[in-house]
Length: 286
Ligand code: DO4
Ligand code: MG
Image (cartoon, rainbow, N blue to C red; front, side, top):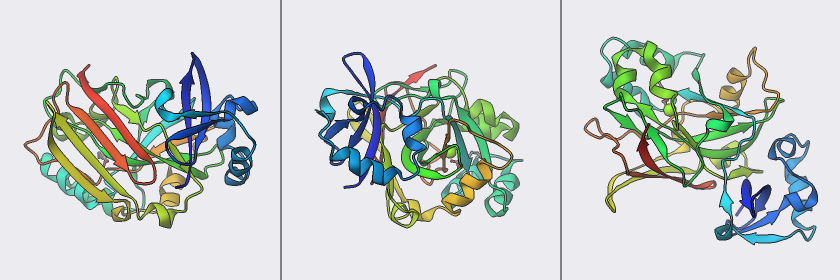
């Protein structure tokens, strides 16, 4: 198992943690590391974490703390139409925007859109939202790149790019309303560090949607199905735009439920990315 960073709350204090086994947390805040962002800016993060892991810091059980979203002041952005499945589903849902999806899939410039401020990101265990004026809502389980202020990919997490398909499908100019609203962006608590792109491309992305205790949708894809390189996506995001606090970039969905499926209030969305872990949220109307 690799190294994973997180933010967690213990006795009312927000701390930074490192896990080597997914079950226990090394409390890095006990070594004076009070924020995740400066740690993610470290020149040799893996080496620094290996040294910290050996330094006898207090250890907590993951089950005994509250895991928070792994962002402080990072903006969250999202890339789209990076998997064939997403292109196909979106071309089907829209009359006059179909060629836009077709073109962007093959164009050198990817689709990239703003998704969330850090303070609006939903953590695991908190509700994600469906808009009260939307009729067709889906989760989008996505690998997320964690990017430093230098534009380097320093880790990976999992995200949910909640989307209103009827609003996006009616008119592509409505995309920001289909994508950005209260509780529309959730991030898993863990940032996997010290892994290469080729290792991450072996990971699976899965989603299960549970209604009244029954799985009503399950889908899976491999990160390897993504059309674009990670550095390519991060470079496009950072073109003519600086991120002094770093950024998170969702990399697009490769799992889309059938056209007859829409989320309902109280559904539970479970997203799992091997190598990262789980993100679980109940659905609420906002
Ligand atoms: O073009 C609209 C959004 C695409 C998207 O969010 C995705 O492919 O994941
Ligand atoms: Mg998406």
